[in-house]
Length: 399
Image (tube, rainbow, N blue to C red; front, side, top):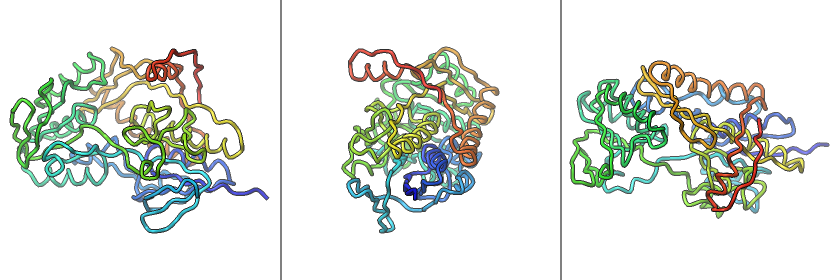
């Protein structure tokens, strides 16, 4: 009689749902997905939810394979030696393999006043809280968005297109992950929408108050609602459970996504740090990481050697309101290049990407094992650069 392997997946984001669905390829594997909400949260649409221009929730069962057991709960401790989880409900849940896909959260707001007066936007609760705050203020009340990365840019443009008076405080540079030509395009769109952009060495927030933020050069910016998009963190579950993590708290793994502490724990998504060199936090990486985590589990349970993960980024996409967007293309290694697609074409492509991420989850639910992605031979060079060691050739794997 064939024994059943119990796999528990922590977190129902882009990585966790992909992993859970893909694991259902095998009838002798039971899959339990633990998540605090009964909904899948489209992180890439939270700025729309906050601005009131769209939703960001999909019923989880709509994107899950029927064989996945959904448990609404939260893990508080991983007891690796015993292969059990302690849940917030008080229950102890055993596992044979654990997929750690707990995602990311807002960074700790350590700027004086920020924790009291600023609104993060990295979770469903935060986006809903921000939306309520915006609805409670007049449409002409000043809004300050802190952070010049993708989330800050998307939030600022979404609100400005809706008629809000927005100031975007970028820090040193607007859109640092963009090519200079893509950055210039975004700057023009921000100007078109009437967003005031503050960047440079003095464009950092020193303090936040109920009705203003103060910059490091002493400038005081009126703000009825301050939105904080600068930085992300990860849940502290791995660290609390005495598992090895990087400085941010991401679970340290090898290149197969297996924990360096325990071969029964595999990580994926924003909370994973393969070789201490994590992939960019994005749904573009999370989906393939989740699928590969499932493949690693399925190979390990049979005694087969798991493959190393490899992913070629193609770029990144940002919405600039509902009527414009930018698709910033990239070369191997996720390095932005001069080529980008903007305007209405960029907006249409961005919307296509958002819809496609949900379609991919549903396809993996109905046809587990169907997700494919293109590998990237530059990973060895990235690891060597991080360690200071020379790199050798590395093959590209198409999955």
